[in-house]
Image 1: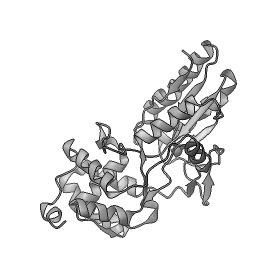
Image 2: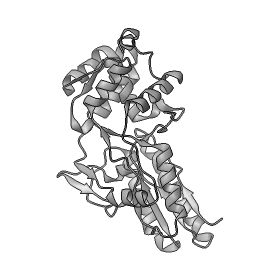
Image 3: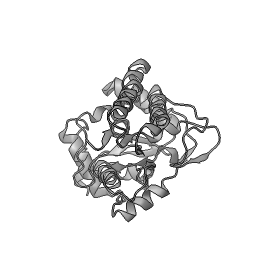
Image 4: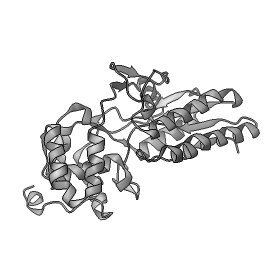
Length: 282
């Protein structure tokens, strides 16, 4: 064995702290200890942009940043921060350490295919809540960066295989952000009439309408939508420049991809059937 990729993690954003610590922190410690016993071969570690946490004053969070005095919005974020710290603190025991941070790992850029347990994914939970409520919060902070799994994987493998790319931290994140109004437009075009509204109007719809159809989804969506703004702007220029030199780039989201992603979610029995009268209008 010449290289280790450590991608295993408990990614339940609302998981129990004790379970997250056991898997993410203790698991990572076991991995780095094992690597040291193998002669210190290179490690490629999958982290998350969520290690940036939340700060009081707006600031950038670049690949070179780590501990910025942040607070964490969930036990998951704290467990991944501590896991990355373990990787960093033991870097001297290995010949090379690569750290990759991502946000929302989105469906395949060509097919729209996604993980089988999409109901556990925060973004899909929110999209379904928009479809059921018919509303979306009209706020810039609710925009979404869709980092397609196939592009993320291609970037990591290309970096790992290129001997001229230095071992460092990478922010493998799509620079294009889909804002709430565009999301509402695409959902409406697909057959889920959605209108951008204030947060309070959306919350009222969750409690008075969505909860009657899916109580768990309404509760989760309410929790996600009430989270405070991180006040962090992710800087991934260095990573995007590296990807560009390797011939890899994220596509700008378009309706055709979104349509395939929604169709896949319907076939997987997660998203409801769209309203026929809206589809007939197009």
